[in-house]
Structures are given as C-alpha cells and as structure tokens.
Image (cartoon, rainbow, N blue to C red):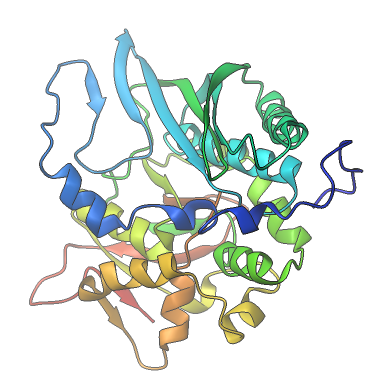
Length: 340
C-alpha cells in the first residue's frame, strides 16, 4: 500500500467488502470456462497466429511482414482496499498478457464497472489514477475507455500490443528437457484473501502485484525462450497444466524451489484459502502426481489463485529461480505434472 493521503471525499472505504471475491480469484473456474468455449467455432484465418485453441494470454494476428498485433482484456473486482493500488494492480495485470507473449503494449483503454449510487466518484478517480500511473511506467498510452453502472466495482484494461511474429512467447511451444523458471513468488491469493477478511495490509504483496513483467519478458526472450505464460487466476498448477497440454510435454515440479511472498505461509496456516484456489486444484488433480512428503497444503499453495503474478517460462532466465523442468510426454499412465 502506498503512503499517499487519500483523495478528498474518499474516506476510509473498504473496497474489498463491495465484492463477492477479489482479483483473479473471481475468474470463472477453468473447467467451466473450457466447457463453454468448447461449443464455440474457432475462427480459421491465415493471419490468426494465436487464437482460442490453447487458451493463451492474448490473441495474435499477423499484421504486416513479421509484425503481429496482440489483443487482450482483463478486469476484476477489488483485490485491495486502497483505490489507487487497486488501479495499479489491475493495470499491471492486464499489461502482463502482452508481456507474457513477448510483446510491447502500444495502447490501452479503461474498462470500468462502478456502483455510482454507493461509492463516491472521487474513489473511481483514484482507481483510474493508479491505472494511469502504471500505464505511464509501461510507456503505453492509456486513452479513454468504457464505463457502466454496476452494483459491484470492477476495473481493468483492454490492451493492444505488437510483437515479432517469429519470436512470440506461447504456452504451446515448450519442449522436453527445459528448466522451468518462475519470475514472481506465489502466495498473492492467500494474502489478498486475508486482506479482504481482516483489513491487514501486506506491502510486499502489493509491490509484487504492481511490478510489471516487462523486464522478465525481455530477459526470457534474450535467453532464447519460446514458451511462456503468466501465472494468474488459475494458479501455477492450472497455467502449468495448460502449457503441458498445449505443448505435449510433462513436468517435474520441485515444490521446495517455488518462492513464496512474505506472510503467505502464515496465511495458509490460518486457513485463508480462496474458493478459486480450491477449484484450481480440483481441475488439475487428475493430471497430478504428488510425491512422498507433498501435502495437500503444498498443493493448495501451488494452485493459489494469483493476481498479477509472474511469468512461467520454459527455459532458464538469469536472475530468477528454477522450479522444475519439462519432460517427454508421459506414458504408462504417468501424470502430466509430477510434484516432489
């Protein structure tokens, strides 16, 4: 949380109490979402480079020569009570979809749902100011947007970016025998859930969520990576499962090597596990094998629904921890993801 004084008229409103959930934990469960999308026709066009098939982070279409246009949208309910910080977190989270595919954000617009008769408009101005601050940091013009009167506050961005079509980072391009790198610690969902319940503020978690994935993406591309995704509402296990399935590889994951944000272990101990996290784990459980000593609590941390989490990269990225490695496609009934 910042040490700014609140804007005049905003008072001490606890934004998280106006939402049924918080942040990316409010996503529709992945299994339910895939069932809905399975009935939709996937557009087939020569210029479409990345579409619906593997649930990648953004759509990609070839524009001109080697230039690809990337398009994404991301918004969610309040994940923290501070309006300015919520705006910053939501903006960083939306921009992450472009970075996760190796792109550069070029322009963004605001997406807002606001209970205009319940919450002061001065508070909305703080949310928008936070989003603008992060967009400026990303050197991405944030211009206008769309607002609706909504009984539950929501905020995010629609972002358009560009990338080299020949060096996209994709979630279906992992190969066997590569180290797995994670660029932000886990546990953000646990701390956000604790914050919503108690009002406690976790400065390290906020700083982690507002940190752009730009530098991590650039480092991954410089290291020659071709496969990546960002870790958000489906948790590390959920996004890893999608990468394994899309790429046709398996994974051996070292749970002890996965970094956690300060306070996450205590939040787990005290039971601040979101419903979204539990649904994530159930979605991947049939494709998961836990080794001796790996507890249900360990798996819940790995399934923790992140908001504005880091990048999961198939390849070594200097300066970031390696948490496992990809393997050949599993055979003889072995699970896609083996956790030790």
